[in-house]
Length: 291
Ligand code: GUN
Image (cartoon, rainbow, N blue to C red; front, side, top):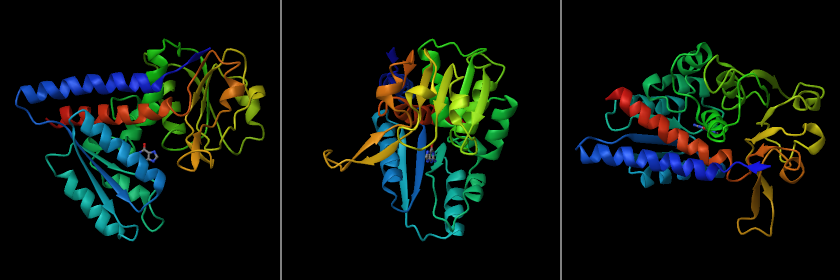
């Protein structure tokens, strides 16, 4: 059994980008910029956004975080996005989700210029992904594909079972791995909360992608021997023995399932760090498109 080291792969990607940005600086060119917009004070969102801005700084990318009060109006938020759409410094715009209930996520995402849509959430980006055109791939799914490729895990013709149908992970990873392309071409099954028996599906997986949002949901008896397990879950479990008062666990019962798996991602240190690395990569791509 091999534990997939997302932390290491992500560090390598950041290092490559750092070199590219250094070269731009040596050539006297501008460098890529990313603006993150955070509405409200959700602790998980705050932690993600801080992680993103730290990663940008480490590779000398320009970064700015707009921290907005949870009672900002939808109109004011849309106007701020429009301001960044026409800004020359920031090539990528990221609005951290979820948003407060009075703001339409759909409207917000559709206001972001597709050329700056480094999250790959705009309907134009999603449509291009489904059709198989070159586009910005959503960061977590792109990171999953990158991990499979880096570990030489065959994808073509394999049965990938995705548990979860979110717009951020389940739907896009299914579409990415389904494409008749290199590093894809899988047989993909998507299952979700309406399935009477998730086990029926998960047991058939050569590659199981768990994006459910429930701690330790996938148990030993739910997978076959030799399965490749990608755990996308980031769940906070109360734990007074930890300095922060909680610990992070995935959607997969790692101790049990790792005994049957051929490859498995840990939580933390698996998919999580890849999301930020792919965001930086998308921002670099946006910079190249815009320049
Ligand atoms: N919320 C959870 N994951 C993400 C992500 O990848 N991007 C954004 N913008 N919000 C998120």
